[in-house]
Image (tube, rainbow, N blue to C red; front, side):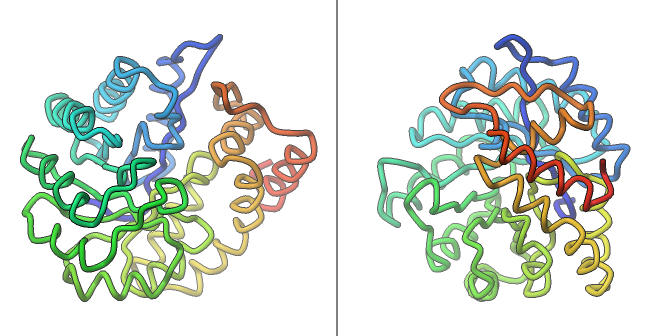
Length: 290
């Protein structure tokens, strides 16, 4: 169920409020373009600036709109275990297929604390859980050994890995087993990630180029890494341009150029500089999207 290209969905806004009609249209568009799943309310979905009620509304809207056609992995993380339990329980209640739980940021738990946090979330609801390991944002890095301990729990099924470390994929295969689902979180290395044991990418760029990224992932899954590399080369300038400033801002700007949604973001994020807009525009042309 969990493989291929899964957009880490942006959350569209209009005049400061959730734009749910546009969100529903994006779900339809992504499914039509071949995306293999949807991941609402991760960092790319501006989870830090959504209220709890908005967070839950977005998850429920995406689950309802997807209607079982593709799996939905609901963002459900927090550095507060009680809050994360609320989000995991809500994801299970509204019919999400899995929950994505980021390693607790800012308060820097030990590896022992990570095991306690994820065990509590595993035990709170009957829903598969993906660990989101992103030390660049959360500061804490879950080691492969810790992940191996958590993988013994039946509903800890995989990881969204944002370390960018190809050796980590192999280490995780050893500690967690070959059935543990490894999804890349870095578009620029997704091709190589699959070559060493990954099965897909939870992607920011897929907000902009879902068809190309679904084709790339399908080529990787078929073992056709030459075709996948051709697509990755076509998209590499876009990967880089989108992340010149915070990735979700770049993604929303690119989507606005394609008429998909407004480029509105919430403070403390701001719109792209003119220099970065020019980079994104050029990358869209290079990818054949504009």
